[in-house]
Image (tube, rainbow, N blue to C red; front, top):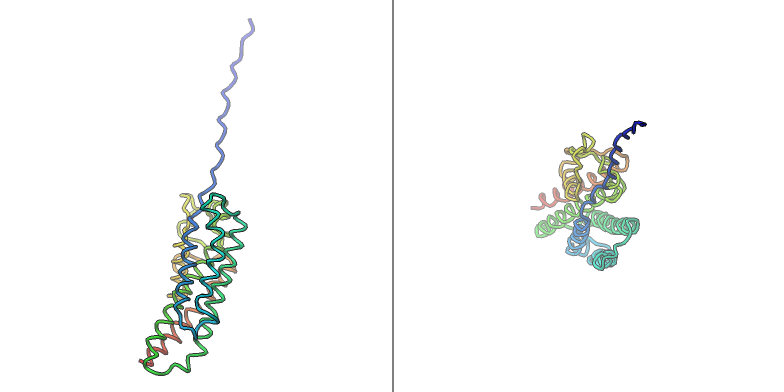
Length: 227
């Protein structure tokens, strides 16, 4: 009788790699609305047009995406990215105009009673600076949250400490990580534990530090001298 050869057991098929999770997107939306609220309470002489205008424009842009998510028909990642850059354009323009107007109207504010208002305005603009650039870092790093998830949250435009080993623990950067990056850049005028890798990241950090330095040294310093 012919011997029957036993076939070797089939090698197990590898499971398809599951894409990494996308960090929650609603936090950045809330941060954008917080900027609009902070801008709305700025003095009218610091804003170009009504101070509430950026907040209204933000709501108009955010509403379609929020509605689509609520009815379980979310917008595509490409559409969300376009809307995100529209929001960044509005917030960045409003911030820069506010800083320029504060500088140009500074010589007129020399009385003691103006000092508290000047400090309050400088603080609002400084916080707005942190929010705006936190949003920029969140959106440009690795070309946005969806692309970062596809790439397994590897270091792209910024290198977080958790990514130094190639992100072997599948760490996911959330918006608060980029907000902390914006905070350290605005208060220390340099990166702390997170390093910019790309030219666009370095350029953005330089702009944020320049705005923060202007607010901290010129505007708030002038208010203290008035006191």
